[in-house]
Image (tube, rainbow, N blue to C red; front, top):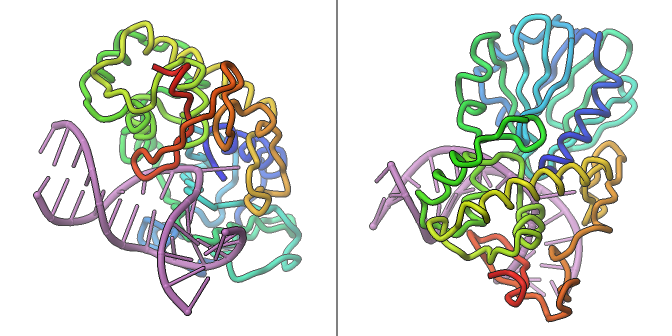
Length: 271
DNA sequence: AGCACTGTTTACAT
DNA sequence: TATGTAAACAGTGC
């Protein structure tokens, strides 16, 4: 499911249930999810207490009493907090047994998701978090000129730049289309043609749209992709993504592939 | 049946 | 270094 608003929604739901619980055992059924050596991962997480759940970009950060567990849901990753042995299927790849008779299940139909253990001093200074750009929700002092200078250093389409996560983190295929529509920018425009004013609008609308999407618990487009049974509501506020008609000028929207990703925009309103 | 598609990221070739 | 393509995988829909 996850772009920033969906990951933030998962974070909030999990945090209510999990803080204070101890991970008493870990079962790994598909090791491709775990980026570390399996024994290293298990030995460092087993018997640790979950003290907090944080987020940066699209990453979930489980703060343990010693170190962190980093988790990225990629396309289909989902967590379920359920009583032991009450739910199982072939797409559940990691099971965290908790000390209260409940389990945290990680389900991932496409097996793209990743988890790793990070030591206290590694978290923000090593891959992958040290590669991330500014988080429009978490970072309050964003250097607009710096963002612009990074954008105009590139010649690839602005949509591709925003999907890279290295300048701004949190936007994915849906919200990039929405942000560029609000900013009236053609997603094909090369980075080196983006003005400071346009760059500032990208930052401003990223904040606005992501905030509103979080308030609506994210976007649920295809029903099977809902996580934790939590259905988002922001699909009712989308302007262009999955749409046919421009809500502003009523022209037919253009649908193209950029970076292999389906892209919706209005070639009348977005220049 | 076969192909195109999917809310992500990264490894690899050029 | 920068950019474009393919790959990781499983399911749905035409």
